[in-house]
Length: 158
Image 1 (cartoon, one colour):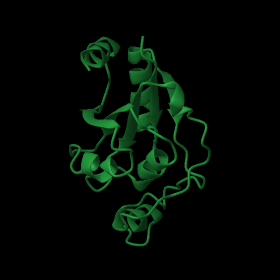
Image 2: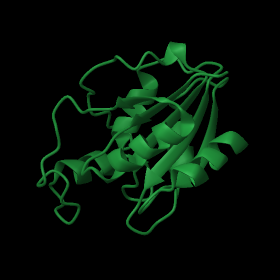
Image 3: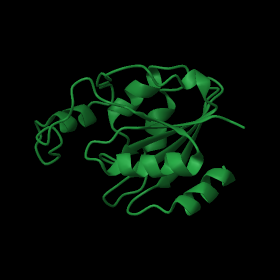
């Protein structure tokens, strides 16, 4: 049986809830991608041009530091990576996470939460952050209440 990990970044708790439900459905271990400097509500105010998240998202080369490197992706075959959609892409901290480990030969399945958009250019924006031998897939937008059984069926179909 392939070992699975659900790694997620959650700014407000929404993605954390989805990740926990997905981990239960997939029989996966859970890992939180935490920024070295936590985001404040002011940092997340996307309407402010000077907010930290706005500045990071305007610079595709931005790589916010992560708090640790304890995900041990080498122990897993499939890694689900979750995040909120920001500006139609993944927050750049997800690039930091992917670039911090060797994903060679791994399968990365993305999942996200969103206030209304789909994945947009998230897959394209993350592709360059993993080894060529890593399979990276667009997964699901997991908004609202998640049904463990339907998520289990989705995971089993991968």
